Amino acid sequence: MAAQREMAATRETYGRTLLSMAEEFPEIVVLGGDLNVSVFTHLWRDQYPDRFYDFGPSEQNLIAVGAGLAASGQIPFVSTFSVFGVGRPFDQLRVLVAQPHLNLKLVCTHAGILTGEDGMSAQAVEDLALACSLSGFTVVCPSDSVETAQVVRAAAVNEGPIYIRLARAATPVIHGPDYKYTPERSEVIRQGADVSIIATGVMVSVALDAAELLAQSGIQARVINMHTLRPTDEETILAAARETGAVVTAEEHYIHGGLGSIVGQVTGQHHPTPIEMVALQGYAESGKPEELMAKNGLTPEALRDASEKAIKRKRG
Amino acid sequence: MATTARAQNNASADSRSRKPGYTTEELQAIALELRRDIITTIHNAGTGHPGGSLSELEILISLYFGRMRHDPDNPSWPDRDRLILSKGHASPGLYAVLAKAGYFPREELSTFRKINSRLQGHAHPMTPGVEMNSGSLGMGLSFALGCALAARLTRKDYLVYAILGDGECDEGEIWEAAMAASHHKAGNLIAVVDRNRIQNDRFTDEVMTLEPLAAKWRAFGWRVIETPGHEFPPLLDAIGRAQRGRTKPTVIIAHTVKGKGVSFMENNPAFHGRAPNQEEYQQAMQELA
Image (cartoon, each protein chain N blue to C red):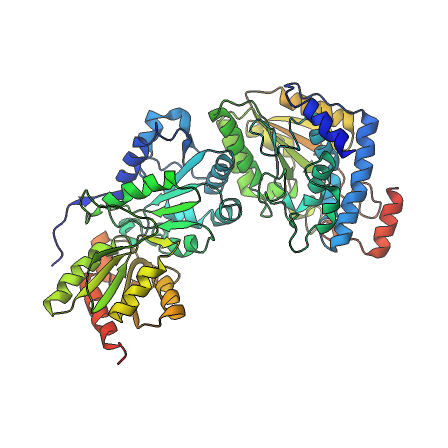
């Protein structure tokens, strides 16, 4: 049922984009934790060895060295897997980066259950909750490779701490070359008036497929690509709540503390609206990414069912 | 006196030798004066950490009034030597020194730990002269390494000092940073361990064995210098020797006394993190007169 789309790995896009910015941004220094081939920063390491430091798997030190570099006017891009870059050094992110609001760029790959066979310890399903709890952090979960390239570039241009969440697996490319990423504005990627599906990351492509399914039964779903969770584009969320009266959130992340929690908070405060949340209910397991997505209900069919349920809950 | 300090630091600001401009007697007089400031600051707040503030004091004075290249009128001077207080709970010691050097008015010490103050409970860069946010132990050596690597990237010759507690060396991140600084040949990084042998609850030997501490650092690839931690000629000499290294990072293990200078605080774990009451305050001030 899913539309056939070109696939691309956002982590490779990250490595190539970073490399392309080296001459333009002489302050960029890249820090790695022994996973540089996997996160594609080996491209930078091999080209600019004098602007690259490896620290091995010592992530507390990795983040704190990055903070020292940022405090000294450099632009550190720090990369490892999400479980090691957000969870393990959370205290360093909090005390050394968020509280003094330093210009550190944390770009982690292998987030979520798309990490697959390595199993639950390797699958960061709470990284967005952790990152979103860091005051002043920008938190971005790009929907595809095209968007990732622009997000990485914006991270170098814009001052302040940022966490960018990328996947291991190749994911569908849903944007054309003309797409323009705007950090402060979510993308309404499909118009519709009956229900809004607010999605982030890989779930945007799943939401587009769900909207096709819903259209078959005459339901017009609005699909919103909420690429940036912090700071939150409340305006687009509230417009969706007001104009469609029913909201479904979709994220490849634990149901607590991520996109669903944010949308629930914004609508609850300003425009209470029925919300259905499609997300992980707990830890997953080893398996192929597509098997894990199906078993955990992150499918177009699940989003269709959730949308129909949200519509039934509309008031009046 | 603050003016004198500022003038002195400006006078030596462009000096690569970072030669001390004060006599031993002058430095001792500053230490006595700042001990009173530390005790008064903590007593005034009714809360704070006197033990480690008193044990680190001569180390900080040796740096800010002796060996460091810095300019209190320009705390963000790109060529300044950086001092990272990793044991951030000992902020009253650093604040007293920074005020004396002229980074902010001495009167501001009375706002320590109070609402709307720039002098937070644990050192934070909102205070002029403070480089790093602190309060969670073990982070400062890594942060200092980041500053040291930045010097290399920007081709600057500044030095970076990280002041570590000995109890703080229980943190794994200290040893992550120790390994990394040695691997990346951060010869412009100097750690100073305030070896006062007491941590929050009890004596370090009771909580977690650190010895052989010097051998641990050597095994991680560091040059180790041991020195008495309250005597100026030896401290200044130790720092001077550390400044001359350029291939390996150097750690100075400064053997200090927790609560130094106040009889009932000396070697007393109870005064790691508690303010003196009124009676204790008066006795301390008499001893420091």
